[in-house]
Amino acid sequence: MTDICKEIFVVSSSQSDLHSRIKLSSVLERLQDAADRHLQELGITISEMLKNHYGWMLMTIEIDCEQIPVLEEEWTVSTWSRGYKGVVWLRDYRFEGTDGAMGYARSTWTLVDIHKRKILRPSALPYDIPTVTSQSSSGDMPDKVSISEAIELKTAYEFKAGYSTTDSNGHLNNARYADLCYDALTAEELEHLVWRRFRITYHREVRLNETFTLQRSDGDGSSIWFRGMNSEGFSIFEAQLVYEQQLTQ
Image (tube, rainbow, N blue to C red; front, side, top):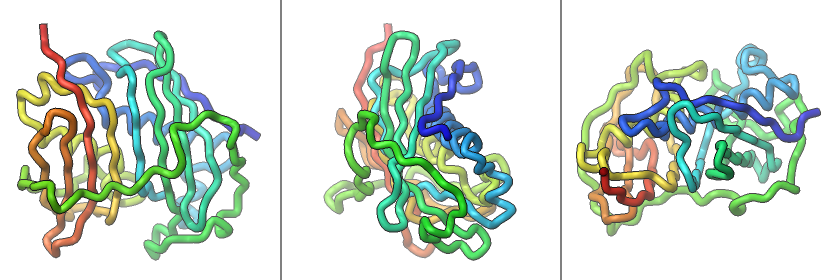
């Protein structure tokens, strides 16, 4: 049984941004792929889970990045399960490139019945997922993102979930939310901003053809906050992008 899964990736042009750094959404995709691969190695294939109406729903993920992978760089993603607390599963990640350790991620998930859209207890999963506690971690369970009422948010744009953004669970894929946040940035921010931490909590799923309004705060020199709001006034997600400014040469 594989307690820790390792995946090796090479940053492609389609995964890179205008500065030849890997996109934040592509990092989220690679983390998701590594988790899927780990389950496959344990005999838990995604297709088998879908056939039995099981699905994993990401609740919160927090990523800290010391050094961002760049175009054509080879990097390794390691992932392991830290078990569960109540109905919440904990999964950690470490990713590193050719120059050494670059970052860590902590995440929380729930097991759901994808037909009933109902959260299931861990005991409902008829598979054994090993728990690893010996690996160094950046902390305990990540805190849910909650934007203070003191932070002013302004509407950036309206979004409609289409074919290109939905996945096999029938909803807007978790990695796409990072693209939505980046699409709300200004040209100047895209030119000078380098992300160092990204935190996001998913409150409600967004299914095909559903719409919501994306809001953002002004940058304060260190972070920008984002929220998605549906037409009924409910929050879809909340996120924080922590960054540093870099001058282009």
